[in-house]
Image 1 (spheres, rainbow, N blue to C red):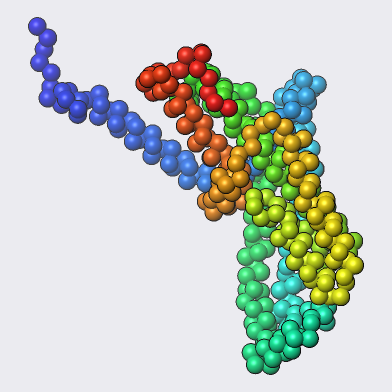
Image 2 (cartoon, rainbow, N blue to C red; image 1 turned 90 degrees about the vertical axis):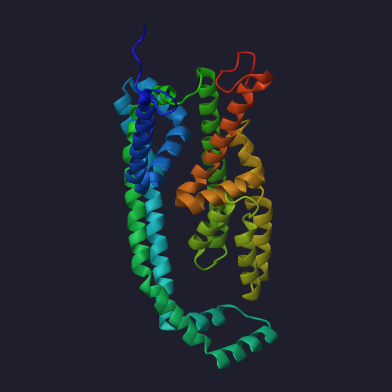
Length: 367
C-alpha cells in the first residue's frame, strides 16, 4: 500500500509544479537582467551580427586559406575596420563639423541674408519674404534658433563619440563571431525548441533577411548616395556631403525614394538661377540614382527573401523607433522571425496534428 501523499503534493500546486514555476520565474528574471545589461550595446551587437552574416563567404575563404580561425578572424576584423569603420569615422567627424559650423552661422545672424544672396526668388515670393522679415523680424528669429541649437552642440559631439565607441565594441564582438561561429551556432540550435529541420529553415530565413537588408537595402542605398553626392559636388551644391547622407537615409525607407532629396535640391538650383544644373540633376536622379535599385538589388540579393513593401515599411520605421539605428536590421529580422514562427505553427498543425508533434519529413515549411 503506497504511503499517503502530502496535500501540497496533490492537485495543481504540487511540489514539483511549484519548483518548476519558481525555476521558470528565476530564469525569466535572469534573462531580463541580462537584457538590461546588454541593452546599451544592442546597436553594436546588431551591426556585428549583420557584418558577420554579410561577410560569411569571404570569411570562410580566409579560414580555409589560413587554417586558423583566430588569424582569419583578426584579418577579417582589420579588413572591416579599414573598409567601413575608418571611412565612416572620418565622415561622422566631417558631418559634425559642418553641422556645428551651420549652427554658428545661424547664431551669428547671417543665415537669412546669405540664403537670400544665393537664391533668386520670384518677385512675388521675394516681396512676401521682405514683408515677413519686416513684420516678424526673421533674422532675429533665426539667430535665436541658432543659439538654441548651439546649446545642443555638446550633445551632438557626445553622440558622435558614443557612435564611435559603439563601432569599436562592434569590432570586438565581430572578432569572436568570426572565430567562434561554429560553436555559437551549435549552442544556439540546442537552445531553440525546434526540430533540426525547423531550426535549419529558421536560420536560413533570418540569414536571408539580414543579407537582403545589408547586401540589398544598405548597399543599394550607399551606391545611390555616392551617385547623388558625386553629382551634388560636380554641380557645386552647398553642403553636398550632408545632402548625400540625407539621400542615403531616405533610400533606406520604402516608399520614400531618393527623389525626396534630389528633387528639392533641383528646385534650389532653379531658384538660384541655375536652370541647366537643375535639368542635369533631374536627369541624373531619374535615370541613374532612382533606377539603380532595380539593377543592383536582384544581383546582390538574387532569389533570397524580399519582404513586401508594406510590412517592410512598418518593420523598419517601428524598428528604428524601438531600437534606434539598429532597427534598420532588427525590424526586418523581427518580422522574419515572426513569419518563421507562424510557419512552424502552421506546419505542426497540418492534417490535424497537435503543436507538440514535429511535422513529418513530407511536410515542408513554407519558404
